[in-house]
Image 1 (tube, helix red, strand yellow):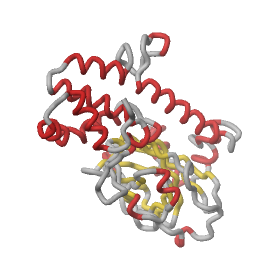
Image 2 (cartoon, one colour):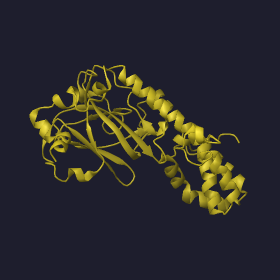
Image 3 (tube, helix red, strand yellow):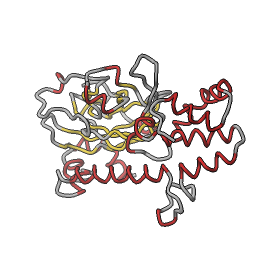
Length: 315
């Protein structure tokens, strides 16, 4: 089975395996394709669904004035790099459809979209000169805003992210009192389909990076709908391996699945990224900044009081 490069090719492979009438299968696929992509994405924070700032095109440091940085989408100066403005607390999260295309033309606004998120992994404050300043405390529950003084302005000490209907936002507290630069890492879910030829063909991050996983997942789901257990069993083994659990170690597997290989790749890439990050610091303590000089002791007395890190110590 050849790896499909477009959505039509992927659906054709699934349809042909089931030998269903095109109109019957296409109607079913149209109703369920979005949930296939979303369910597959939520199994793990796969490497190609996670934005790590600076892996493609970081800002050019030093920056003389953050207020003059060209914006690509919203407040995003580059992929994963956000410039916040004084008096504005909430910012839509943006990313790009395809990293390679973005790299060739980062100013093309049609490459950007607002993703749905699984998680925000970190929010790092950087100085305009390019120095790491702080690892922001992150809250993934907007109820954390309930008891905050939303009129307060100053240097943000925490970031909250909230999911909207089809996008997500970062909310900074206190409200920024001037321009600040942050690099933000997040993992999205359900990456949308995009076209580069006026709508003739469609792709998404799964088809760009692991197309056979989408085909096998579609086969597995469709076989359950059309009551074809033999096809489902084969697709499940191909996708998840045997036993059908991606979190079972290699030594306990009698067959490795597509997602087992993808999981290994994801862990290797993340480990490589963490290793590269540590090269710039003396220790993990310095690199993370959590509780260290960069994160807590550098805050003013009032900023420490406002910090969630401080409130956690006293409640």
